[in-house]
Amino acid sequence: MSQQQSAAPATATTTVARRPDWWRDAVIYQVYPRSFADSNGDGMGDLEGVRSRLPYLRDLGVDAVWLSPFYASPQADAGYDVADYRAVDPMFGNLLDADALIRDAHGLGLRIIVDLVPNHSSDQHEWFKRALAEGPGSPLRERYHFRPGKGANGELPPNDWESIFGGPAWTRVADGEWYLHLFAPEQPDFNWEHPAVGDEFRSILRFWLDMGVDGFRIDVAHGLVKAAGLPDLGGADQLKLLGNDVMPFFDQDGVHEIYRQWRHVLDEYAGERIFVAEAWTPTVERTAHYVRPDELHQAFNFQYLSTDWDATELRTVIDRTLEAMRPVGAPATWVLSNHDVTRHATRFANPPGLGTQIRTAGDRELGLRRARAATLLMLALPGSAYIYQGEELGLPDVVDLPDEVRQDPAYFRGAGQDGFRDGCRVPIPWTREGSSFGFGGGGSWLPQPANWGELSIEAQTGMAGSTLELYRAALHVRRTQPDLGAGEAVEWLRAPEGVLAFRRGEFVCVANTGGESVTTPAYGRVLLTSGEVTEADGEAKLPADTTVWWTTA
Image (tube, rainbow, N blue to C red; front, side, top):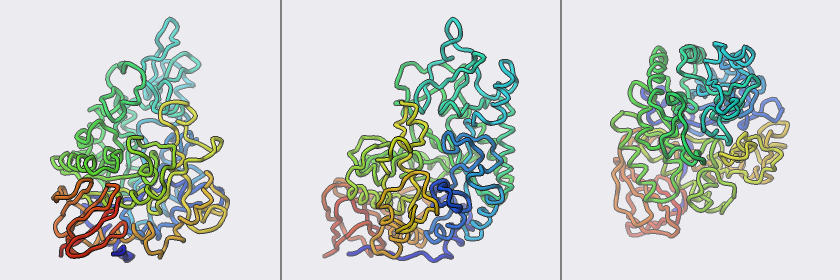
C-alpha cells in the first residue's frame, strides 16, 4: 500500500489557535531567524523574511512559531548573548518589523513564542559594561557573579567549574576579579539572588506581552540559580555529567520560585500565553518539577530527543515521561531536533551511542528512512510536539563545513561541546535554483550544499512520497483525528521484537525500529505510512524503519 497523504485546509490552523488549552497538543515550529528567510539580500535571515513565509507555515499545519533570539546582540553566540532585551538587532530588522510579524501571524491563526535568555547577558549589556568600568565594589557587579580569585595573588579561578563551551567558567578582568560565565566569556551569568535582576526580567516579560507575543521559550531555564557559596564540583570532564547528574549550577530548586513569580505576570494577560522550559535535567521526573500548575506550561523532553532509534529504549522513555507528567497535569512535550543538536536525519544515519552532536554524515538513506518513521511516532504520542525548521524537508546536518566559515563559539574554545552546531543551522532551501536556493538574493551566511535545491520546498511540494508532503499529511491527520493530540496515556499492544505498537481510542500506531521487515495485524484502515506497507489476509508487512498509522473506526 502506498503512502496516504492529503493537504490540510488553510482554515484549520485558525480554528485550532482559538481553542482553550491550545498548548496541550500544539505542534510548534522553531524558526532560527538568521537561517529561515532573507528579505534584503544581505545573506542573513531576518524578521521580514520570516513574515513573508508565514503562509507556508500556516499551510504546513503548525499551531505556533517559536523564534530564536532576534534581540540586539554582538552575536558572540548567535544572539544568545543579549545586549538589549527590548530592542531588535539591526541585522534582523526593528521593533516595527517584530510588531508586523506578530500581527500577521495572528491574522493567519498562528501564535508567536519568543526566546528569552535569563541566565546570562552579553558582555556588552549596559549593566555589565558599567560593572567593569566602576571596578570592585560597584553595585552593578552584584547583579553578576564577580569574585576574587584563589591563590596567593588571586591568579586562580574562584572555583573549578567548567564552561559548557569548554575551558574554565571564569574570566579574570583587568582589576583582578573574576566573573562567572557558564557559556562563552562574552556571556556573563546574572546573579538571580539580586532583586534588581528579577525586577528587570518581569519588566521584560511585560514589554513583549504588551507587544502581543503568545509566550516565551526560556533558554537555560535550569541554570538561573547556583548553589550557595558556589562550591567546587570536583574532578575534570564535568561536562560528561550534564543532564545525567546533580550539578551546583544547574537544576537548583531555587529556580522554581522565579517561575512562580513569572507565572503571576503571565496570568495577568488574556489569551492563554505560555512558558516553555529548555531544562536539561538528570531525569524526566526532575523535568516535571518545571511544569507544576503554578509554574511553566511545557518543558522540552530532552531525554526523548537523546534516545536512540530502539523500541525498548523508546518505550521506556515514553512511559517514564507520561508517568512523570501525569501527577502535575502537564502535557508531554516531544522533540527530535533543534538548533543545538545534530538533525535527527543525520543522528539516525549513524551508529547508536554517539550522542546528539555527530560529525559524520552516516548512511543518508537509512537516516532519512528512520527520521520519517520517528516523526510519525512522535506526532502520534500524547501531548505537544516541536518541529525544527527544515526537518520537514528531511534536511541532513551539513557535516563538511570548512573551518573558516564556522561560527559556533564552542568550536573555537577547543573543548566542551564538540562545537559543530553550525551544521544544523545552514539556511534552508526554498527553491530548486538561485544563489541561495530561495533563501535570499545575496547568498547565505553559511554555505549550502550543492544539492540543497533537490530538497527544497519547491522541489518537494506536490511530490508524492516527499518528506514535506508526509509532514503536511501527518499534521492534517493529527488535527482531524479526535484521538490524537492531547492526552496522558497510551495502551501498549503486543508486537514483535523491535516494534512499538500502541492504541489511543480508535487510533493505532505501529513503528518498526528494527532492520528487518515484520508482520503485524492490520488494525484497520491505513491513515498514513512513512514507507511502503503491504496488507493481505488481515496482516500488514512493515519494512525496516517504518511507522504506520491506522484507524479502527
